[in-house]
Amino acid sequence: MAIHHSLLANCSLAEIKKIYSKPEVFAQCRNWLSATFKDAQTVSVASTAKAAQMAAGEPNAAAIGSSAAAELYELTIICENIEDITNNITRFLVIGREDARPTGEDKTAILFSTAHKAGALADVLDVFKQHGINLTNIESRPSKKRQWEYYFFVDFMGHRTDKNVQQGFEEARKHCLQLSVLGSFPRAVELL
Image 1 (cartoon, rainbow, N blue to C red):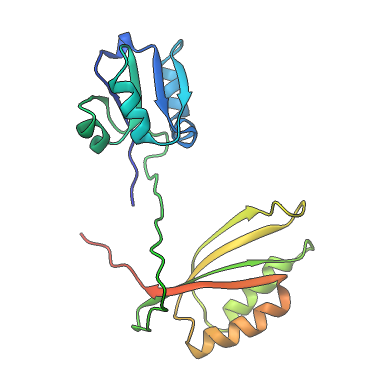
Image 2: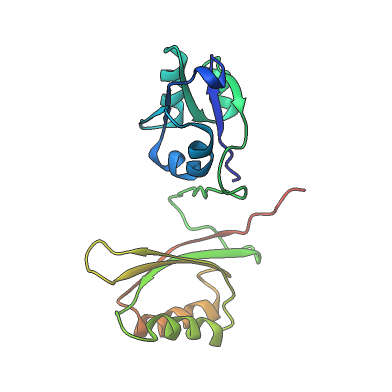
């Protein structure tokens, strides 16, 4: 889902002395904030909804949030699309109690970690290539357990029950410290 941030307030841009939002949102709007505000205090809160609620009850305060938050808390949108990266997106996952059945147009999400050695990730990726598994996304996150150990989150075309996918998992596990299947799901179709 595309994420756009707006500056919300019940005062003018020049009157803003304090801005509320989530730390992640401040990071996503860092360039805009430094170019627009020299003296305004930024205050981190738990959510953009909480930020809007607080700004609505305080003079000379603003929030960075969504147009829905502006409407809900009766704030004016002072500036729109203030995020530094215009193609800012957030992924949302729907968790179910049962596996999704294969549709023929599926994706699968997995998580794995490798040993800290040269070529470890390439070995796993080569297994996917050999089994015709088309990766659509790969992200890494540092492990909080060991220094220099990373978790890799991967999405690929195919269902966990497909023969080539099962064979790929079996072989990839030989190169992984851990490999977990997070789930298979029907591929989303973009609406034009």
